[in-house]
Length: 102
Image (cartoon, rainbow, N blue to C red; front, top):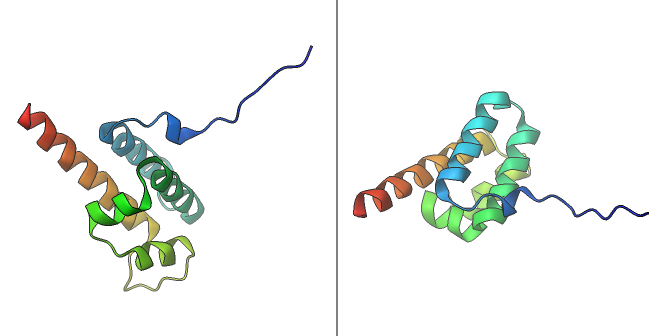
């Protein structure tokens, strides 16, 4: 008997801004100093909400995001951890605004 499996994809489980922000919180608290983890998480967030949406909502230039992912940034540019924190903060603000509007 063959066991059929399906690739697990985190982005299929992140449906709301609140879920995404919470996931970013947990990841940064658990191991926020790991650049590989931060880059992987940012890539997942880009797949979950889209790179255009990250750029639009955070105001961080696409070029800077890609430089952070490629680890070619210097100390004057945002790191993947900085970008993730910005994504989390914007998602929380947007969630609060939508709840207040209801």
